[in-house]
Amino acid sequence: MTAPAAFASLPERSRGRRHPEAAAPTRSNFQRDRDRIVHSTAFRRLVYKTQVFLNHEGDLFRTRLTHSLEVAQLGRSIARSLGLNEDLVEAVALAHDLGHTPFGHAGQDVLNECMAEHGGFEHNLQSLRVVDELEERYLPYNGLNLTFETREGILKHCSRRHAEMLEQREPGGVGRRFIEGTQPSLEAQLCNLADEIAYNAHDIDDGVRSGLITMEQLEAVPLFVRFRDDTLREFPQARGRRLLFDSIRRMLSQQVYDVIDATRARIAEHQPQDADEARRCPPLIRFSAEMREASTQLKRFLFKELYRHPQVNETTMRAKQVLSELFAAYVHAPAEMQAAFAERAADEGLHRAVADYIAGMTDRFAVREHERLTGRRLF
Ligand code: MG
Image 1 (cartoon, rainbow, N blue to C red):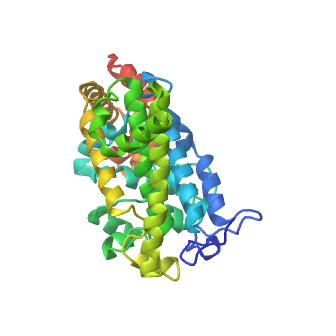
Image 2: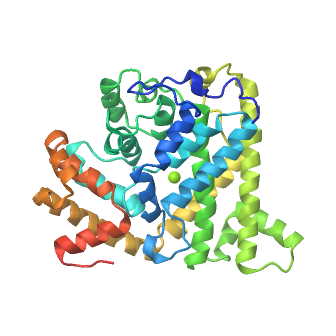
Image 3: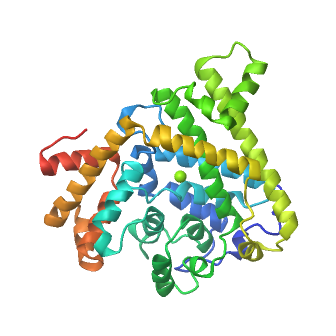
């Protein structure tokens, strides 16, 4: 372990947990958070939740679980070079998608529409809700009782309205920065960028593997072409999957080095003396200007050619139908939900309880429940 940098988050200086607990004898606060996340029910469900491709479309595509592991791996290796706290990065990375609904972003859009009159639905806020409220594992409290720093990292985005609601419940807590316009810890900023690096790379891989995008189409992505040409210079015979994988591998490495170099320069400019000073600086974890532009181009390509591919759109439409009909079915007959959620309706309101229940489902459980309640099978 390299010595932590002055601006790293230190577990011994944590702002603590909502319910105070004695320190663990052998683990730091952030290690303990990571362990609680790994043992949670929501974490295990990530294996059956869609990233882009539905879980049943193939065994080799990324799921939310493997995506989260890739974010943790990229995040940790960058954190180590920068002297940031690796355990905090790992905890945030493993938890960052816990609030995702079945069927990826399509699911969040549907729940948000269904909840329009009842406070809306937003997956970052839901991830926080999972670790703060919905996990039922410990006797003294609901949720996992994670440290402020891990919860801060999980709440990546938040509307002003939701931030004010959080601030009211928890003054000076994780909602505050969205009101003050400050940044989260550098570890949290890093997870955000590692997320982008991970999905850009693995969505090219899954996109080509699925046949929805071709190597020829990737000619339109200068970032990819650059590394594919590097591969071909070194291995002129390279073709097919190995050419794809080697090009992506080079692209990932270069993006990691780029973040490390650009961030070091930015930190040298601002010289934060501790983690709180880093929060008051502009965002410090970043790509160089050229890599930012290249990454944005790649994102635009994936959006147009993969996320909006007619075949993906078709699945998305059916997924939306499954979830909106499920939502209506449970609102009509709350007793069809698991007892814990049916009971929760009394405290949280029926609609919120239904949204929590559906958001926690895996893709296949949602499909089965939809079939059970409507008699129709859409997948
Ligand atoms: Mg993610």
